[in-house]
Image 1: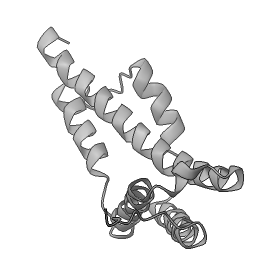
Image 2: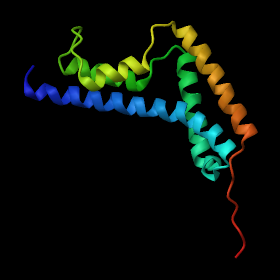
Image 3: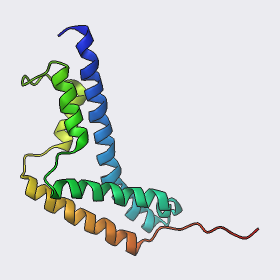
Image 4: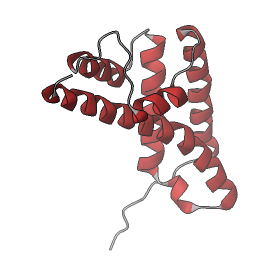
Length: 139
């Protein structure tokens, strides 16, 4: 593999890392909301955080229910192909470990069902632990 193509593989690893951070935001965000609720942390009621968290899971559910691949996955795959990995799976350290954590060998339908239930839990959490909406005060 020549040096000019390595930049594509580095970019693919960056996309994979962003994908991983997105997943951590959705999953750990949910856990932090509940722990924060029990611990009475005020930041877990921050409306932009809660709305973005809910929208992130909604996006994941919609793409899965429609049978679409995640755009980050597609972008990463295109970069890997352009970078010369092709069908030969030459992994980097980052790619190897993030893939082991993120991807499982189950059907797309099973993922859609799991995503749907997780979205329902997030929506119920939005109702049970409502965000704080800042109101403008007359000064």
